[in-house]
Image (cartoon, rainbow, N blue to C red):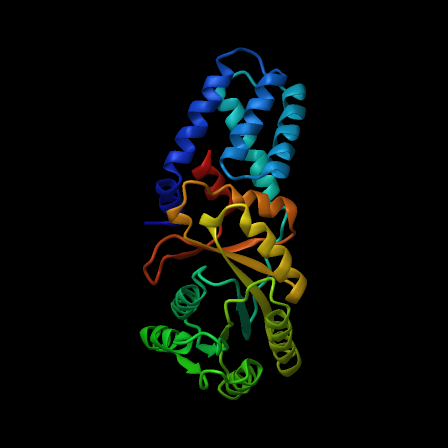
Length: 298
C-alpha cells in the first residue's frame, strides 16, 4: 500500500466530513460571507488552525471574485490548489552524502521507532547506516535503539546510561568518518521544551556534529505526533529556536482523523514536512508528498 492509499484510509472520515459540510453550505446558494465564515469553521475543525484557516478562506474569496466557483467540485479544486501552494512554499532540504540526521522531539512521539524506520529506508537505498545512542537519560533508551540496529543489521555507537550525550555523539561521528558511513542517525533524549538545561545539552550535541564533520550534510529533524494537533506548533517553535529545525517527521498520521495540522505548521513556520509515519511496520515511513496529502484530505 502506497503513501496515498494509507493517507486516504487514515483521513477517510475527515474527507467525508469536509465533503458533507461543503455540500451543505453550498446548497444555500451563492458563495457569500456566511459561506466563507462556515468554511473557516469547517477547516478549523479539521485541525488546520485559526491562522491557516483564515489564510485559506481569504485566498479562496479572492479566487471566487476572479472566476466563478459554481459547483462543489470547483470549490474543492480551488481549495486543493491553495493548500498545495501553502505546503509547497517551504522548500525541502536537499540531501547529500555523508548525511547526518539529529533527531529531536518530546517524550512519546515515536522518535526511536522513527529512527529505526529511517535506517531501514536508507539501507533499502543501498546506503551504509550508523545509529548513535545519544539518549543516555532514559532507562532502556539505548536498549531500544540497539534492537532497531539489530533488526536493520546496522552498526550502533552507544555508552552506558548516564554518560555524557555529547561524548557519545562525538564517538559516533569519529566512527562514521573512519568507516565512510553514508548516513548517521543520532537519537536524543525526549526533551521537554520547558527544560532549559536539556535544550542547552541539545545545542551542545549539535555543535559537536557541526564542528567535527564539516563536510557532512547535517540536518535536524523534529519528530511530531500528528495526533497532538495544534499542540505540535509550540514544539516546532521551541526546538527551532534551540537548534534550527530543517525538517519535520510526522508520526501516527494513520491514527488521527485530523491531518490538518500539517497545513498549520507550513503556514506559521518555514519548516517542511520531510517524512510521515503511516503505520507501525518497519517500512511504514514515506517521503512527504504535498499533492497526495491534499488529495487525501479534501
